[in-house]
Image (cartoon, rainbow, N blue to C red; front, side):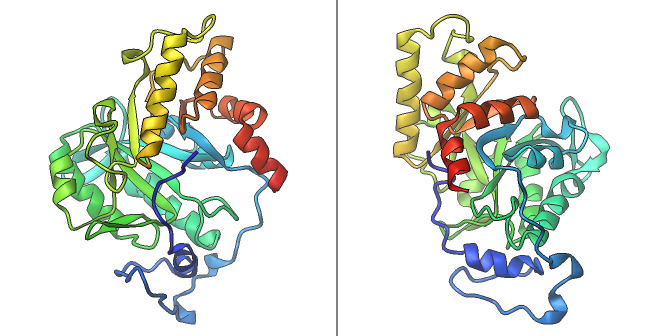
Length: 306
């Protein structure tokens, strides 16, 4: 199962710079020395967490939990979704409308930066893969994307970036969903976010350097909702979708899958895991955590290796 499909030569660089989380541009091929004065008191490594990072676990509408981002991380999730609205130049969190008491920066960017500092360059302690921040734009995409990318650019050692067509992976990869501005993202010589593709992009000309993730509505392509056996034709279609995406270095996510704590939800999750779907959506953090630890062979292998 691919995680993000980028080469990551800068893991060590991120870890070293993570102690200070400097905000100036850094050349991808060089290591910058940090002066002692730049290291904050919060830079001491956190004790190793007993929570196992779950590569498939995605917190849908994460901001609706009591502790946005933190609840997801505490359940081992490695992907979280933030819905944003641009209002008077600021990005606010919210599903049906902007909550003017919460911004993208104070709800996600700063907490991620703090985790990065505390863990010596990682979001999960001792875990060197990237965490996905899915930013679902609810307002006008053309207006919102430059503001999003500018805010992400304030954390160049935290967020993966594309510079002159070359991807430099960091501890967090931001993927833009919802109202997206593909033309602007393609035109940017430097950007700190990536494009959430749709099934129409599967096998198309856009590569993983701009479209690392293919997402779509489950009900548009499948009738099965986890009751009885999955139709053989639909199972074959699911495996074909995943194989095509993986051949292009891309990951796969479906939304609108059953999410009530019923047997049919777990039956569908089993088919997704068997097909090697990379991202499982849920609002039930504890439920998906229990399922993946018990039934995902990849997580069982990770537990044995720990």
